[in-house]
Length: 107
Length: 119
Image (cartoon, rainbow over all chains, first blue to last red; front, side, top):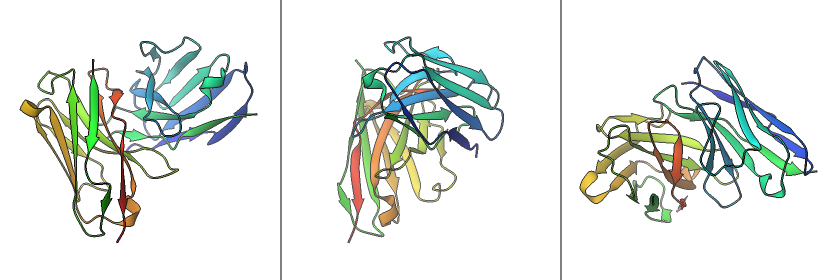
């Protein structure tokens, strides 16, 4: 199975900060990488698909980049509603896998 | 409007078999490229992908759980069913179903159903 490793596991930041979360795959997954945001008690929400495509309705402060094994999710200017847990997920293999999550907290 | 909703027991006993149903609307699982997956999340822990069924009735399972899982679909009822055998307290989790499209991302999710395994 393809293993997905996110870093950091948690992150403290302030409103207005630029934040980057990294996801690394255990083998090349081309651009088959998606990012989700999850708030407590809620289902995950798709933010970015195919490594860099913004899902409809998602604010443009969210962006994704990368290919192969290394990917990043960037939030250009944190807003109060962005404090949540973020997950990467690969779709290169039919056996889909998620990263362990990055919890973004208010500093 | 795409919606998915999970249903099933909130409480199961150890060794029992869990059956969960995902009822969806707004799309057809007979459309080329469409898939539905099950994903779970133990309390306070990360998401774990479990199984996927596609429009062509191909099925894929988590390596670690494949001996215990069965996924099936009833296209006429717009339902996907997951069974998990030999339930254990470590299987306590919120279970989600989600749609996957040809973009190969989970773009719509159900609200999740919490399943507790306890005697």
